[in-house]
Image (cartoon, rainbow, N blue to C red):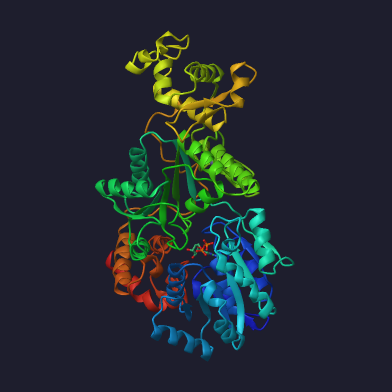
Length: 611
Ligand code: ADP
Ligand code: ZN
């Protein structure tokens, strides 16, 4: 029978009719077929890679209920709302439901009418829940954000460990675990804990080619981020600025507002109610900018975040990629900016040394940090270096990062390095960078005179190099491990073991010519070269604007985030293809049967009105 596959609904048909997508992406199809056939496994895909469909489609193809363990209430609610828009009978069970709603969910569960149930791991593993489920026909279990069960991951949640009960109580029900964290130890942990050691691991491509990557030394972060935000979204799209501290996040939100952005702040020190409100506003607003610490993360489901900036260097490529991966989940062009300075590296190194972690854990974290530094200081394609951290080798340079588009020049910086190191040594390794640069540039400041540093042979040997460039030399030496900075005191620079070989002339130092990047002038990538990014960005097209205005009204009428009505990508394609009837509209990716039914006539009316 057409549309059926082994007696069950065909996954491709479900994908098309319910979700409105013409084709599976990457390994989705293989995974979906495996689960529909009753298989279990682990799915590793980057954020935005399309993990949800890997369990949602099988749950709709198999008889019975799909149960999804999910770590955050906001995340569950978003998924459930989105599924209901697609006409799927889904519900969430969590601690914030009132008695009436909870009773309704349990009633639907008992009647067997639910297709997908999202539930927190602690509630799922309650005896009463397990007992109910044992009387229910089950399609599958999905464990979302599965890295939460690993102590090695950066989001360990003890309650996730109880999920091992699923394999014992329901050995015949497929279990599918999903995560964006791919490091070997976490993968092993998840497989052992959930009884998936004999089942396949599906490693989706980790590349997110539509995200443009750019990194720069921090040099007036405020101006750098404002420039970046302005060129990233024409002031229309949503963005996130990640800051190292709560105070940094608050201040950043402040100056973003001053600059005219609808900016909010989010960090772990806020009241739960305020955090939820911020989350909701970010999910629902149009051009909202969130200034946040890394506490803002899981549960950001919004697919149309246009840019992510980091004011400080993240601790590992894993966390950085997860954070920038929140941009452009809709596949449209998106941008990321990574700002970094020597202080970031030094802070991270010292924090690590002082942490109570085991030596083994520290070694791993140190290695991650070094890789992150390598990406920030890279002179060649940053994406290639990044993807190598995930065990993936790009066949060619990406053409969509700053190193590809504006390759930096490397020069032999050995002499400059020797001058700086010798200034450090001759002043007794007791001074910060500002003073060292004064000595090098021959500035007779009060402090220089007070310590008699104008008498040193190093005094004035670096006049020909600007202060800005000296900072670049220092940062790169810190990155290369030839200089250390005492964080606990006043930021004194100290030589390391590695500096000896440089001073003795045994080791050459290659430095990026940062001066080659004129301050504040970072060009947007040329379209031709950034050709890997699909679909044109939305522009001032009147049809798109009219559709967007309609969507905003519709969303606020239903108190839903705008993207749940239709994504930017879908609106862009509707505006571009100008469907004349429901049939043509149904061919646009993102327009499934349920949405066609709900919104089709309205969309056609909006299009007719702007002809
Ligand atoms: P993840 O959970 O892996 O971060 P999601 O499941 O949220 O990613 O998917 C990211 C975005 O990609 C969503 O907007 C989703 O609708 C879209 N998407 C996923 N699979 C497809 C597909 N086969 N075709 C078109 N869009 C897709
Ligand atoms: Zn590149």
